Image (cartoon, rainbow, N blue to C red; front, side, top):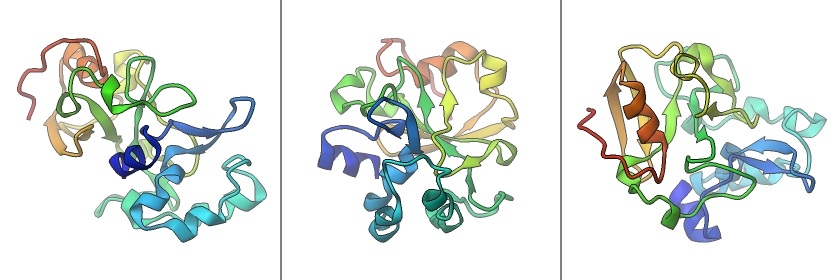
Amino acid sequence: AMHMHHDAKNSFPAPAIVSNDGKPLLSWRVAVLPYIEQEALYRKFKLDEPWDSDNNKKLIQMMPKTFAPEGENLQPGHTPYVVPVGKQTMFFGPKGGKLGEVIDGTSNTVALIQLPANRAVIWTKPDDLDAELPFDALTKGFGDRVNLGFGDGTVRRVKFPLKEEVFRNLLNKADGNPIPQID
């Protein structure tokens, strides 16, 4: 869906759909709805209103199954799927990043993280993983494995804990640091 968004709009989705003054309103998960066969749901959103407006709040319960992995015990309307956000990630600022900015290669750069169920977020809320958090807060609750989606569309179940340097290198799109074998 993110690559289809890039093909259509020449950028990955921004971390949030924002207001004219830059205030985050809705999650990137809403922006990719047309690319996961959810155009009808996308059209129900008022894109100029926040996720918890009267109109948009009613749509939380309509979360597509794509955002709820099987076997996870999630609260209704919550998803464990977040993007890493921060200055050096694929998702920074009010506009989506471009494929050409991922200098380290899309197969070496994390685009999506599956959080533990107890850290799941409301799917329409612009609430993702701040890549600049202290390492303990960034990886809080991760078990011995974590699912990471990479910029090339692959998903890898990665053994945790990883060294902080390796994890941060995976989040950084252009640091030039080599990535060791992590699977």
